Image: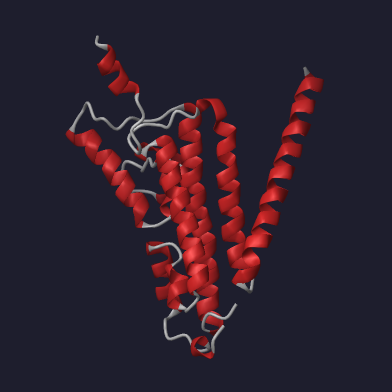
Length: 148
Length: 81
C-alpha cells in the first residue's frame, strides 16, 4: 500500500454507501484498485448469472416497503439478501413488476423449481457477499485510510 | 397450434425465461462456490497477489466438504430407509 493512502480523505459512511451503490467501489475510494475490481466483477457477475439462470423474476420484492420491516423480512426473506447487492436489485425488481403491470401477457415468466431456487440463491449470495465487502471496506476506511 | 409458435414460446430468452438447466443444476453450485471463495479471500488477504492461490484452495475445500456432507446424508437416508 502506498503512503498516499495513509490518511483517507473519504469518510467511512460515504465509503459504505458507495460500496452498496456499486459493489466494490468502496475499495476504489480508499485506493485499493485491485481489490475493488476483483470484488466488483465477482459480485456483479454472480448477480447477473442468477438472473440468466432464473430470469429477472427471481428478484421478488415485497408488495409494499413501508408498513412493517419485520413483515417484509418474514414475507420475502430472500429479498433481504438480494437488496444488499445494491440498486441493481431495485432496477431488476422494477423491470419484472413493470412488465407485469403494463402487459398482462408479459413475455417475462416466473421461473419454477430448480431454476428459480438457483437463480434466487445466486442473487441473494451476491448481496450477502456485498454485505461482507461493505463491512470490511467501512472498517478499513475508518481505521487507517484503507490499509489492510 | 403451429410448431413455430411452440418453439418461440418455449425457447430460452436470457433474463426473461429460466435457463433450461434442470438436468445438471448441481453443476451450478461450482461458480457459486468459486465466487464465494474469491470474494472471501479478497477481503481476508492482505496482499491481492495471494488471492488466486488461496481462493482456489478454499474453493477446493468447499467442494470436498460439500461432497462429503452429501455422501454422509445419502448414507444416513439409506440407513434410515
